[in-house]
Length: 162
Image 1 (cartoon, rainbow, N blue to C red):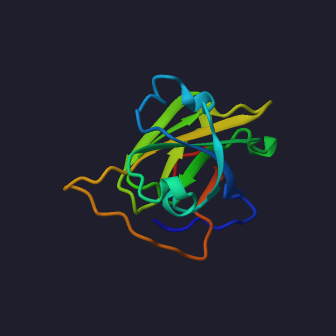
Image 2 (image 1 turned 60 degrees about the horizontal axis):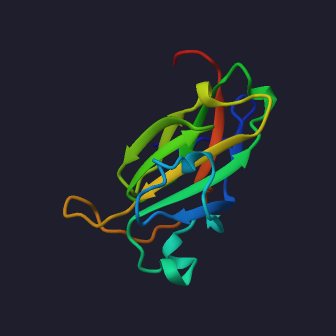
Image 3 (image 1 turned 90 degrees about the horizontal axis):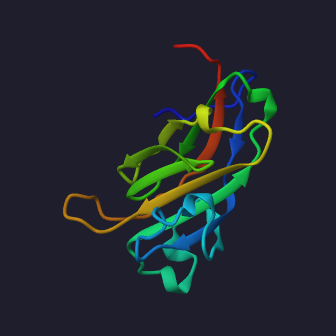
């Protein structure tokens, strides 16, 4: 997947930074609606692995949640809004404003979801990402990858077919 570049027509909102984060070892978050707000969040830096940020998450394998609130620029209204996740190892489900907008499996690749219909133009938007990284014989084991590009952001595109 080519890395989207900022230009006069394509704008980017960098989502790197501090997010709310919570482990979900009992896998109750989806049932309890954590996509609208986490029960007991702590702050985590994104992009980065949760395994290296907290002592109690060093060896954690299972379900986690990330949550971020943001405003989408009103100048993007009328365009298609895509959310790009640089990597979520291994399986991810994504919600915007409580609405499930898509899923992805394959932890070492970026993925993009069209979130236009879930965006609120007159207020704050909540992005929630559930990540599950259980070891399975059918999956590539977790590893470390880095680069010089931000790995999470939103883009706007003209509302046309390409």
